[in-house]
Length: 328
Image (cartoon, rainbow, N blue to C red; front, side):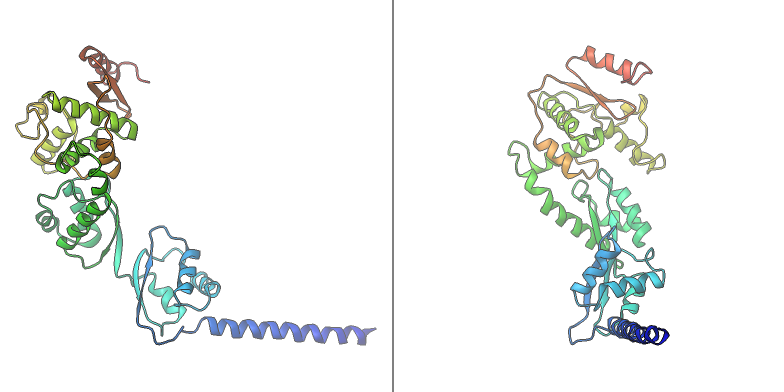
């Protein structure tokens, strides 16, 4: 009996040995350089992209031989939380280990998100922090471009110049925003962007933004003052150079600030956009309903917009929602 058991044991050992040898040879092959005569490749890791997706793309692009072994290597060296978003230059003679470590430090550019409704100054501060571009250089390069620096996530080279960044953002505006702008033939592109910059700062929800845009257009066409608080914030921040924030709190005294952007003192549209609006805000202006009964609106402390037909209703809303009265 013992001899029979021992005889059965040897084949199992042999099979196990073959499996171990096979795994060893497979791993050795998988973790060796891909090789080949193709030139260096640019490999892009998107913001928030998962490790499995990165490994799969590396295999599909012929940069590693096996995604599973690449993943095992990443976890073995504890690199899973160190991989950066951006673009990388890899050559065929790089091993999976070299590629894995390069993904943690060797990027050529960086993903930067420009928030909807930011002023040029806010964009410049973000670029100064992330790319080391002096704020004054960006402001000089983007002078006169307010409203057309399209908010989006960009993959900027680490050695970007201000003019390159401005050109890329303007190109993105032409690609994504202009097709929507052209849908409205009653307003000029400049008028649409100016109105969208006001709407961006005045309302959050798309349905509210459409109604606010409609009210502003009606007021403008009937030669009413627009009375947009965001324009007062814009003026005040210009005066203080952002020391109280780029969108500071507005007081009753601020409504008398002398500036063509003051929509309380001067009728008509401001001379230029006050921020860089989102595509949604631009759509809201393009689709703005002007046949509603509303002529007034306000945003309460929670950001909810309340509309009114008459000035008396508007005053009641001010008392209720802004002066400590009952809130919904």
